[in-house]
Amino acid sequence: MVVSTRDAYGDVLVELGGRNEDIFVLDADLAESTRTFKFGEKYPRRYYNMGIAEQDMIGTAAGLALSGKIPFVSTFAVFAAMRGAEQVRTSICYPRLNVKIVTTHSGLSVGTAGATHFCEEDLAIMRAIPNMTVIAPSDAVQTRLAVAAAAAYDGPVYMRLGRGDSPVIYKELDYEIGKAVTVCEGDDVTIVATGVMVLRAMKAAEKLRADKIGARVIDMHTLKPLDKDAIVRAVAETRGIITLEEHNVIGGLGAAVAETVAEEGAKVKVRRLGIPDVFGDTAAAELLWDKYGMSVANICAVAKELIKR
Image (cartoon, rainbow, N blue to C red; front, side, top):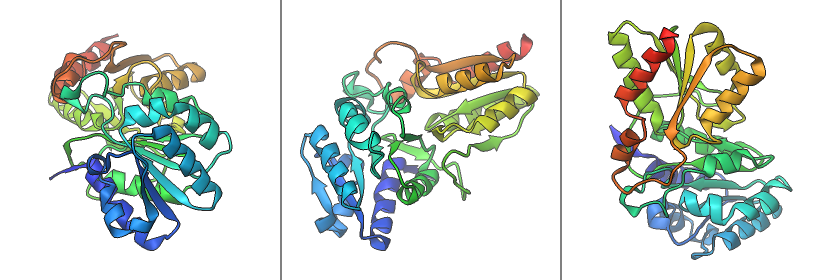
């Protein structure tokens, strides 16, 4: 079964809105794309289309939070994380307001729209802002649980969703913000993945298993706070770590894992797979993932190289 994470987001917003009248939704004229129109149709008095004015939208969300509401703010990742970065930092995170920023069309998922609409930097930006929790769900099931957890959490949250339909990984899941999920066991190498890359990590683990290589796959759905215990166990129990993310290799998941390994003083190799430090070319997202080294074949090749050392 394939379901887009943004559809799951729209559906769970409607459910949460029925249980909690403090939930408000704001969108920057992209409701069809972010799927927040579903909430707007059901609860029009708690839904605001703020137009193409992302900074104003984030400022309005801050005001709603100060009034005791729980605002969910949505637009494409590039617009919320970059156009609205100053307002997120100063108006939401500095006073630690209860605002949830859920973005869609992250990474390279807008494909043929090109570099101006890609967002390869949002995880790095949001990780660096104090008080911000940063989440990147891997499928529709986890998205529903993550959105519900964010609504229940008291504080600012940034959540990153993609665009297209994606296979459902989980039938059910005990979800906790900051607690990673081990989706494959293995004691040769660890692949730490986030967001849409978790499925590719699982496919790579399956291929490596055919070559009698045990690959542990960790779904690191929360980048901040990072589940450091899961990394420490991987360091102790496997011979190398690969990180996999649809994000610039600078500042995102790979950086967070490498920082943890370095702080622990561990002697283990870490290889970061993600978008190199370039603006992405224009093509279907799957082709770009392959081009930038995130193909299943390359993940397997890097794993084999690591365990030879």
